[in-house]
Image 1 (cartoon, rainbow, N blue to C red):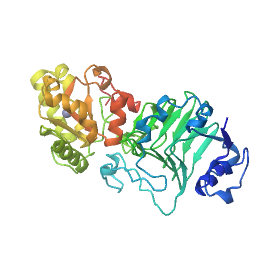
Image 2: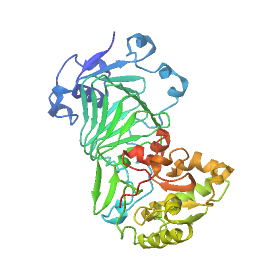
Image 3: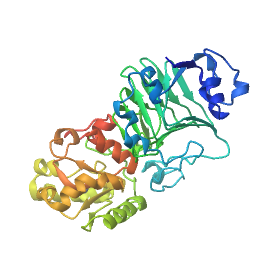
Image 4: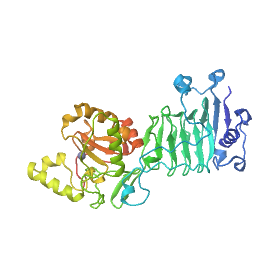
Length: 403
Ligand SMILES: [Zn+2]
């Protein structure tokens, strides 16, 4: 058994000095002044490491995936542990406060390369968190090997902390991974995997960057915020029949315009797709929607109009983050263009907002043409979850209009 029980402080010291794990002292303690900034409460941090080379494989924790030594793993990890990972390329959004920023998923913050203390779990190494590990402010924790959050243990990324994963993070069912307000997790490699347990978000979804890699853990969204009548969860603005937007929201846009990042995403998608998707309907103001709904009521009666048209303030088109593409026919979903859109739009930051079979949750009939922009990372999280946006954000929906 070569498993070591060392504090995070010792680990930091060992890895930062470039020594092997042999220099770690079992159960040893080193004061934080000697070790940089990996946790100020070192005594509560218990971390086990194990070398998972062939010779010591039997000593590795049993939770390691069977394919840990597989060829795909060996070829993984384009990021060297000695380099800061690039900031994930979410579409750029305004940093200025106000309507525009409340519309959007925020960028993952840039890592200031000169201020970070770096801790690395190298390929072939496994780190076991038995109690609690804080990735504190000013620390980049780079995981190319495996990290296991044991039963009842927690991994917390604090404000200003940055956890980069190109390897595998396994959270046991009773373990928890918390991304604090201001903390940041970036999955930097398509082979990165987080599985098991739950990830509790206390911050905007833009701080959980998983355009690469896969997350199968349950994701618990942060508390909703309501600011000036606008409801957001983790930076994602929500409008449905139960949750409305205030009348002036989005009024900087013109009819059928969309926010710049949405337009850029459409252009990118059209560059890749065989088919050119056409925006048939983008932003609609509150007052446009008043007129549209009234018009439908005149044509079909209130009951009928209510099944497919929104009351003012409840249309997602008022966000400026939504487009109706190509067609308004349900059969569009069975065309090659409609199928490609449903399968691939997440790659560009979109989701099919009103899927078939989820009508009672979204409060809308199936609309294979209606896409909502969330940003690439968040759209991938929602797509991979198989949930509607209401379910993913844990907000109310349904058919009943709550004005
Ligand atoms: Zn629509």
